[in-house]
Length: 117
Image (cartoon, rainbow, N blue to C red; front, side, top):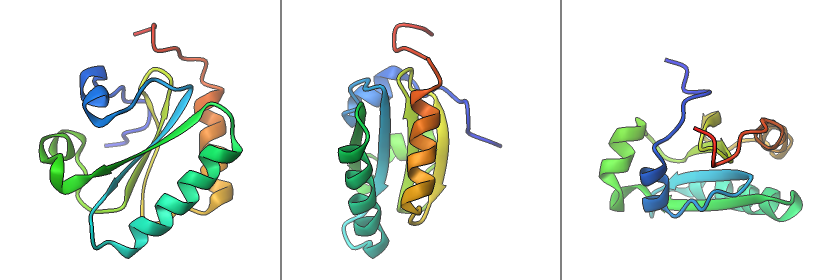
């Protein structure tokens, strides 16, 4: 199943700390995951570079219900969300910075607002 375009439940996003920014990088990590640190670095760089982007990192082990609901089976898993909580891109592993910037641009241009839907 392709998760792109799927809208994540707003209550679930609030539980994870997603605040409805124009675009969100939602990262699921675990404590001893070396690739998670690389995703954290790249995501933070993109969030600092592109206005309107927030990066939220979630400890997967502390949020097992949400992990199950979103079908996260490995870390790192990164969701790129638009303002309405729709999945623009989902990836596991470490994304290349240019690919992440392109995915964020897609989220920002989706035109979806949190008030819609």
